Image 1: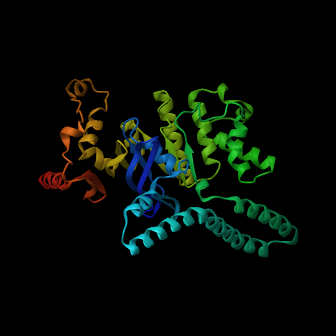
Image 2: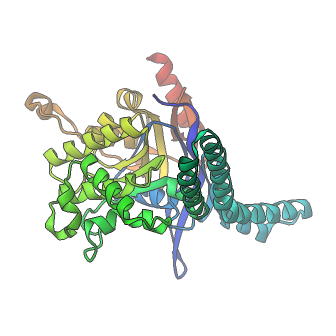
Image 3: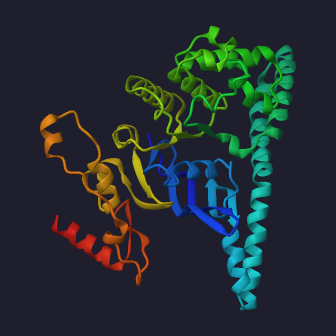
Length: 384
């Protein structure tokens, strides 16, 4: 069941990369939110910024500007836009405000893990106080030892560990020098788990959950097929009991039959653990099957966002229409008649005078357009 409360909120995310004087705008002013319990699909052609968006959310990159909120806490804040404005600002009040925003952004990033650890420790205290009070003497000793061990782990817990990532390449994302047991348990060890028996049992449980067997724990990645490697990647992500998983094209390198197995596995895990998933892909037919809402990216920008059924039934941006026209169907009659729509942004849009913005044209349906395009879209929708 999808909760309307957003688990993740991305506001005006920009991720720029500099090489000398040249700046690449990999992600440029992207905003969206992901509700707790849903699958949010992010689609677009190769190089459009999908993977960079995912890596920015999990803090593999320091974002250039914008904000990322997870469970209501700002986990990433870019200050470049404030710094750029500060260089040209002349109003003393505005200068003071910009400096305060830069300071607040730095403090939020610095303190978000401390605040989360303190909250988790308070939850553990309340939980164990009640258990210890109701327990017998022998049980109290065991519970007190367990409480201390949990507190030690809670002190090291970082909020971002509640977000895990399944990487696109199942070969490159696994260390060839580590056994499957070491790969899957690495997160637990980093978080302070030292009990080998607990680690082994958790690893075996994860392996069985993803369709592998205990004997696989002592093997190395090169001994597995592509689909099995991807299952190991899934096991590594869910062992941390995350609330959000970023699945970066988890099936693009796999055969069609294996793709279906991995997608079904993710569906089962979503139902079992109540996971929220950011599903990055370029195969629209897979995204439609798996996602509740879909965002379409082009050259670093979000050009359209809507519910899955709504997007496929009423694509409004010309790039989205181009993508949908490229989906093949197992129907020879349809395939003979199918016409591929080519998207040429220079011919489709005139943004020399009126710049585009992300606008809501229907409830929950957003499109990147300027005022003239917005009026045309609204006219089309009113006719329908």
